[in-house]
Image 1 (cartoon, rainbow, N blue to C red):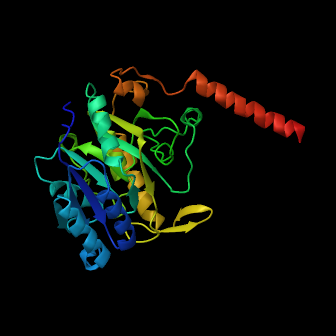
Image 2: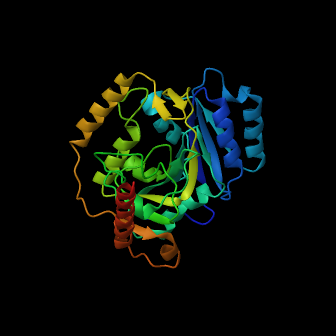
Image 3: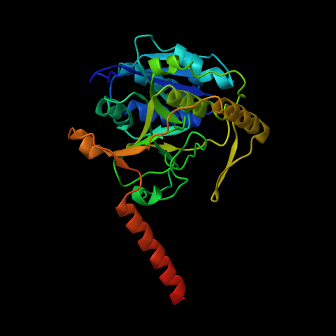
Length: 322
């Protein structure tokens, strides 16, 4: 698979709907990215065009002044919005970054998200995801987290846990499914498996990216998460395709759950028609990859097992003392 060239242009695609405050934060973080070779496609489904908000208009003009092309479209609803956004990207651009409008990127996010395509050029890599955690979450010990059976996203159980937390370790991990909040994918890989749009998903498109990842896996592609590419998922309470309630206890969905159930049923039905070999998922040290050593290892390590047992014994002793 061809890796991106050092100065290769990439496309940043953002679907947005009635979230001007959150979109402002995302655009500001884009303007400060260390990777300079990108253009922007904004698919605006807002009731009032986002450019009518002064701060958004100023940021878009500033992004253009920095030399980045900006395209604003209004195409597609719900399940087809990402397809229409991809189609608006110039045909010569192969690598496309898909970002939700309530995400804020660290300054080196784009640079680090593209890196695995170069480091793992010997693999058939379709897409790379970063970690998109809520801003109040502190980094965790990846070794300990991987000891939990529900931490890695599987095709049948596309959990948010791996990508929903930051980590102390710098690693690349193979997964069976990626979150759609922010990922970089090959346009050619998306087109090969039929694109993003699948008729039947609701306007909330609950499992749309899970569907795409399952089709990528069935076509023999690899998906990875890089823990160094970090962003914050701010969870806008309204706008977009869903509504949530935010409190100190966490984020809770308040949109009609019937659409999620409908999408889940369609996804399970489509998943049952796909199959692929299930080799053991592997992980790589980013430091070793940068040194030219592409040696993988198992997800669970002896070191992680020892840490896990140590915590269990400490917990048991604490209860015994009490």
